[in-house]
Image (tube, rainbow, N blue to C red; front, side, top):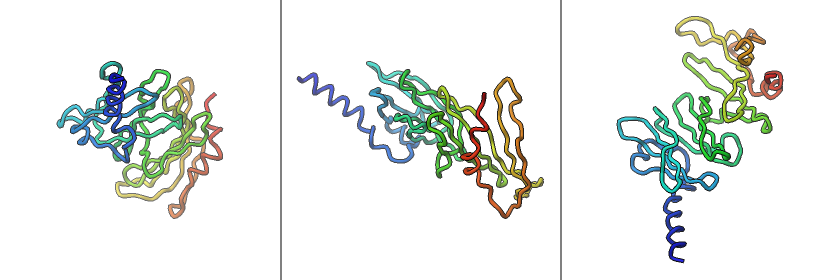
Amino acid sequence: MKLKYCFLLFVMIICENVFSQIGDIYYDSLLVKPYVFSNNKIMFRLQAYDNNHFLIIIEKYSSNWYKVDSVWDYGKLTLDDINNDGFLDIVFKEKWNCEIHLFDPIKNNFINTGNFSSVEEDRMHLINKQLNIFYDWGEYKNWGWVSSLFQIKNYKRIELGTINNEKTRGQFSNETVAIVISQIGNKKKKNKKIVRKMKWDDDKEFNYAIYWKLNWKKFLRD
């Protein structure tokens, strides 16, 4: 009986942070104390390497803690169910993009799925849950933007198409003159081809969300 209570106490200590996470987890906080959480009844923890490097170490518990992966150059992260499978994924955040590690419940481990536009500000959306089809949106310097259609398959991001604004040339130009829609093929085909290019009045906004919802099936690979 005492052994049972000791085990429960141990689990409570290990899990003290599991359901307390709200918002972002910052590198500085990981220097003070590792962040512990559970996925599929397996314990994981995140900790910072030192105060001179933005190196976050992912560890897994099995009789003892051992390293399963590490990620450089991210000052904050969050836990979220990105692919809607009921398990927590790790999102390492920068200003303009993020690196997502999806949880594989078969291997009971995290897989680096690739780079994404920021998941903040409601920029990433699910179109088809069965096929894991998403679109996202990102911006870059000089008022440029791009929206990507992609599929998450075997825990990897597969690019299917893009929509971006084409701007007048010039260092300080911010006028959109065209909307360019491209399809991305597989390795046996040309990687990217323009399927439509529309002249555009900069006073209008192109609704990429509606376009993807109506046309996503046309971009699926054979």
